[in-house]
Structure formats: structure tokens, C-alpha cells
Image (cartoon, rainbow, N blue to C red; front, side):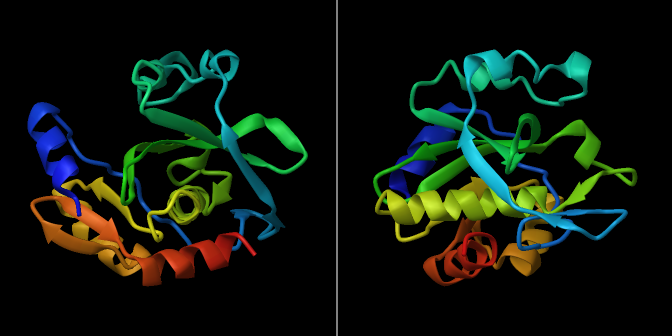
Length: 182
């Protein structure tokens, strides 16, 4: 099932994803007020990409993700507020699943002073939804940092299948998509 993944990983250096699931919410939730806001996920444009720089507090080089035609980069925004990006994810649709290359919350959604909870969970749920839509039965795979394997098992129901490879199966993908996408 994931043979193509193992072949490609020998050619790429992947340090592993290190996002933390702060809370699984039904959308995203304001830390201070507890209010929930409906969200939308859409493709990131090259114009919007210019805002996602290290100078603006983003950790990853999102321009690099645009260099690979097989990758699709999506942004998470609050409905009716499409100009403020809450988080970004880079996905690759494979024949039998979706591979999550990179995921990042906006700088103001990281750390103790974050504005919103639920951003990473929302983006992972979207990856699962995309997998269902593209014939992958909800399966999503990604490489984890070693120290976060147990965290992803508990928070996402991901299965550790060896090395640092994690897989979200159909059952857990359904739970995530049903939570975020009614």
C-alpha cells in the first residue's frame, strides 16, 4: 500500500512533522473567549504565499512546497475572513492515500499566547477528507518526530507502523472528518 512512500523517502530527507494537537474542536476555538468559528480550507495562492515568510514569523519555507507540482498547499481561514491565514498544510495525493508533507499553524496560533485552538486538528481532518474524496478511503500518512509518535497515537488515533511513519486509517479518519466537517 505504501511502497511508493518508502521508495521516495529513501531519496528525500524528511526531518518529520512536529505539530501538536492542542485540542480537537468542531472548528477553531478562541483561547480567551471559548467562542468557536467555522472555517474554510482552500488552495493557497502564490500571492498569499508572499505573506508566509520567516520575517513574518512562519517557521517553514512554504515557497519550497510550490516547487513540486505533486504537492498541493492549502490554507485554513475563518469563514467570512479569508485574508487571515490560520494555518497551512502541504499534501500529496498518492494512488491509495494522502501524504502530509508539512503542516504549520500561523505564528499567532503557536505557544502559550496563541489565539485559536484546533488549527492542526482541522488541517489533519481536511487531509483525511481529501483522501476520502480522491479515493484513498481516508488514509493519511506522515513522518513524525520520534518524540511525538505517542502524542499522535493518542490525539489522532494514528498508527505507528515502523520507523517514524504514522498512518491514520479509515476509522479514525472518519472520526476526524465528522468532527470538523458536518
